[in-house]
Amino acid sequence: MNKYPHSTRILVALDCIVFGFDGEELKLLLIKRNFEPEQGKWSLMGGFLEEEEDLEVATNRILYDLTGLKDVYFEEIKTFGKVDRDPVERTLSICFFALINIYAHNQDSAKAQNAYWIDLKNRPNLIFDHNQMVDLALEELRYKAALHPIGFELLPEKFTIPQLQKLYEAIYDSPLDRRNFSRKILSTNLLIDTGEKNQNATTKKAILYKLDKDKYQSKFNAFHYFISDSMR
Amino acid sequence: MNKYPHSTRILVALDCIVFGFDGEELKLLLIKRNFEPEQGKWSLMGGFLEEEEDLEVATNRILYDLTGLKDVYFEEIKTFGKVDRDPVERTLSICFFALINIYAHNQDSAKAQNAYWIDLKNRPNLIFDHNQMVDLALEELRYKAALHPIGFELLPEKFTIPQLQKLYEAIYDSPLDRRNFSRKILSTNLLIDTGEKNQNATTKKAILYKLDKDKYQSKFNAFHYFISDSMR
DNA sequence: ATTGAATTGTGTAAAATTAACACAATTATT
DNA sequence: AATAATTGTGTTAATTTTACACAATTCAAT
Image (cartoon, rainbow over all chains, first blue to last red; front, side, top):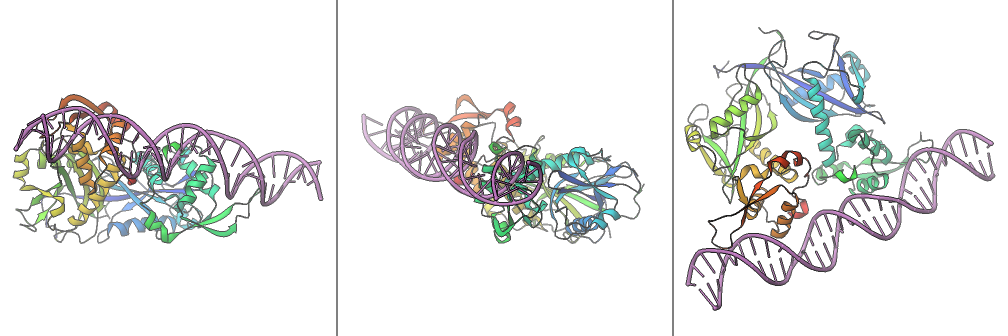
């Protein structure tokens, strides 16, 4: 069975930073732990990589259990591997962040895990090295979202340009110029005008767009500097 | 000892894609395996994460054993985790790429590992999923080198602008405009004129520069689009 | 119905950057 | 001294970005 006899086998966890957006603020899906260790404290959603389970399958399993969603956008960030990072037993953590549409996820799945959406800005202290993980995930999200059109993953299927702008303002925690933002976004040709307008607006109704999924893949790498430094 | 009793412990390997540059071509440091499994075939340099060893320590250990160098620049790419990726036993591979000055590394260390510098363009078929790892590493190197000043890691301490240009041409496998390249590089203010010139030139001797290490860290993230698409 | 406040969509000119070039200077060789 | 190869620097047009202004839409309050 163990054919590389002299090496150590190690417990491998996956920890997920799940980002959401409620229209105003960037949110994190966090677990109020009702199990040991560290029961009662806050942590990221995670799980162990199982025998006979591909790594990617495990990530999707964990995201599904938490959100009820399949085909969630996620990205590996880093493996945390300090010997003593988990006081119970040495555990590697392969760390991911995921972007989901906060309104599409299954509330029941979240409840079953004792999970809550928490404002990124008011996040509680987390167990182990999970604070570092969130810091890194935010950094990575900011990096990636400036270079690639991944923000859409956090929005409903149909969205307005002002909504999209609010999202980017939340990600970078800084105001963007409305006119320049609009021009830059539209110049990507990734948005399709649905012909509809948002209904719940109290002032001028904005055009609802959807993502051009055919172009999305081919343009994923074509839009470095989606948000430029000078735009911030 | 095993306090999370129901989970599986897994063998964890680290595999390194070591890039070098000989002045003309991008090179890979590859192992001609004189051990089982797959003896006689080519592979990446790797090793197992050991008990009581931090992940970062393990990476540095593996790089040191291979090159004789400490403080090597490396970057984690991805964890490969298909159940059957290693036919001997299930093994996760945490995959890194490293950039080293090919002339600073210790030949004896490489020889002891049966390692050779191979032109990236003529690389042999590698074992397991190592081909995929190299493909991904090259992609990642191209991505990062376009956004951050990491190319220097592949050059000697003192280098000329034409040398640096040849490096970038090797990385992107495409010619760059000499005059625009020079201007862009110098405008970063990351290069210090050493006052010396390279001696082994058969024509006009070029100015030797060195990296401004004080500015390097602070400007690491300030130079997104170090190499622009339009420059290629 | 009219006005006002908030928000959305589009336009424009100056500034900055990039792309596409040309030319002069340096070095070893002939 | 002339030649060939390479290096350093400059210049202009095109493009992109920045910093703005103005008109149109909507609902609510008069």
